[in-house]
Amino acid sequence: MTKSPLSGTRYYTSNSNYPPPPTTNMLRSLPRSRWCKTNIFVIVSVLSILVFQALCIVKEFSLSNNKDEVGDIRGGLSSYDSTVAADLNVMKQKNQDNRTQGAGKPSPLHKIMVAPFSAYKVDEAGDTKHRSCKKTIIVHGKEGGTMKWSDQPFDELVMSDIPSDSELNDDMLCLQVGSYVAALVSGTHTNSSVQDEAAASVVIIGSDETDDIVHQLKRDMFEGGSVSVGIEVKIVERKSIAIHEWYQPSTHTVRLARSTDQNSGNFIWKFGATRLINPYTTKFLNPSDARKESVNVDALVMASANALHLADPDGNSFRVMKDYVNGLSSLVKEIDKPTIMLGIGIQAKFSDIKDTKHVALHEHQAHLMNEIAKRNTLEKSVSVRGEFTETACINAGVHNCLSMGCPSLSISRERNLGQLLGSKWSAVESKLAHDNSTLKIGIGLPALHDDNMKYAKVVDLLLAICENHDCHFIVQAPYDKNLLLKHAGDKVDVNNVHHFKGGVETWFQFMHQLDFVVSTRIHGGMAGIVNGIPTIIIPTDLRILELINAMKLPYLSFEDVMAKNFESLQAIMGATKKDFIDFEQNRLNRLREYKRMLESVGLEMDP
Image 1: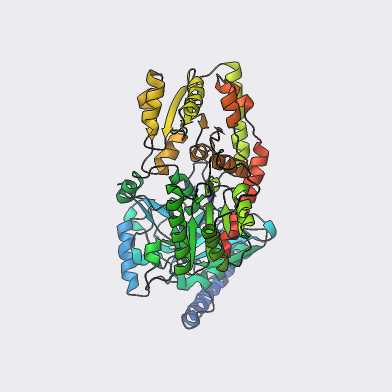
Image 2: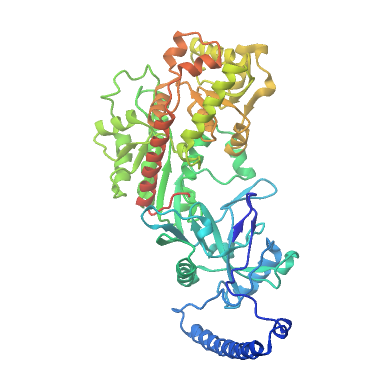
């Protein structure tokens, strides 16, 4: 199998290692003596083939009575060298017929293939549906050996999508190599250049064929010589989990619900926590559904943000968040399954807490952490936003908290995100130094609506940057737009003010249009960073600074903003504290810790 340089397009070549048989004309052109010898050779060859076919029939019969031995399902079929497009209606009918005739069992006359698909399917209306596999065969190299998708032995069937029938998907067997996942299918074809979509049909292979497929997989990869390193095969059964603060697949109803959120930055950390988990090996449930007696749940994953309020215990916000935390404790006890918490942290302004070394969680907050610890054997089962929150846990006698930053740090699938950000940062510096280029810049507005002086100082800095650039202001709260327009007047084009109320999908698409981001909100900044856009974050409170330190993000200190008069992007870039090598090493360490946490409750990390 070979791949074209065009992404997503693959071409196929014959797998046969045998030369074509001699033709009659070829034989006639030989000298008589050689003709006789060749005739004898052909006769012997034909007899050998007949004997071999007879043995195959006997073996095929014995295989039907002995499932422990696997036949060569791929043997004897011609290969094909064109991209195959299968008509989904034909495939669905084929699978419907097979459900009554032994569904999911590949016939020896069928060829095993792999059909890549997305776990999150978006339809024409923009609604998203999640699909998962009942069992997934995960292949990787031993002792750190690298495995590529091209190392797997099955031909790839390229089609618009797998059938959407829920019964079929529920028993699907999948193959994962590296970051690629595909359904295993059994298919037939009649010629080497299938153009008619109805000419090809496939049957989704069921999970009861796992052992046979693994046997063939190992045999073909070693005997076929496709890999030079040892392989390890892990069979993962689908887990059903209750997930608190789940970033649900987008539908019209879900998008309407999101539009009422008072802070669209919440979409970022929810998306990050949800997409940490392998969607192919996991079924996600709302806690309300998981509470039903008829529903089996394997684990509980909770995601949260700044839910731990320490200051002003007599204030209204403290009482509201205390009820919220107590509700989380009740959920943990009610589900009573292996549990982890992702991303929880302290809400605090710089003025709220003077002594960060001796601060401690309140009793109800410590109770939540301890309930989680009871249901996890891992020493660290709660990822907190930073060292400040981790210290508060330790001072309260809680020892299962680990400073990890925000789950959104895991969103990017870049091999070296730090290197990418560093190179783009240098490119921007070069443009500014040599030709005064006009850049397209994203601006994250500050959450300082209760402090007019600080708000004015920060926004004036942002507006100074925009005098020479095309700036786009990103709204995260309902009050942001009116405050900005009231303060800036005609300095801001209202058409350049954006509020992504429906979710991260359109938000992330927009970020790819930008050259640079300056944000005074943490998740506005993370929207740039995880999409590979060089970003400066200005921490306007203690919780943002805690997250910056935990994730090693580029930042301009709030003290510098208040004390100095920056008049250009070039000036604030020069004052920014950054280390992209340190950022990348820290990111990799955090990903390893997230992987350990997920494995502690039986879950796979999203490849």
